[in-house]
Length: 219
Image (cartoon, rainbow, N blue to C red; front, side, top):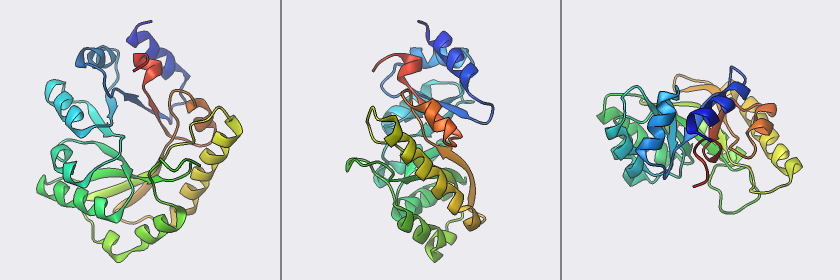
């Protein structure tokens, strides 16, 4: 199966309101170029150094999404070019992104990562922490970031009911914070769903899916 064929098959199955992030982590630039030539312009990486190296080598009309866990001390390396940061899970990290965005004279779009899974290994904010963050004075002072919505990762399980419950929970949290929109908080995106569960995620309200192995093959 070719990357272009895989990509076009998936794109054809997505509703118009759903954005496809091609998860290209660990894949060589030659693979990304095949997806690019097939029309894909949004790529997701989980390591800042790898993403930066690919950004340097690839066409500049690509939107680079950081989908992995972000360490504050690495933010400066992606601040000049990153299009969307999916995994923001603390005010401290937001403040660092804001600081580096300001240095680069730009506003960086972010998603807040919500903890919806039953696994301890997943990062994210719970509902109370989310509300505290969005209503805090410190958050309102951040002029160089913009929160576009939420991101969540379901439990790694075969149990579709469990996954559906978690996706539905994320959608209900998203709906509950619509009243908190401000200058730096424009809520229109729910990033949930990967190769194994993106169709279920879309049924549950996802507007952005992160798909890697179904496009590029196994890691």
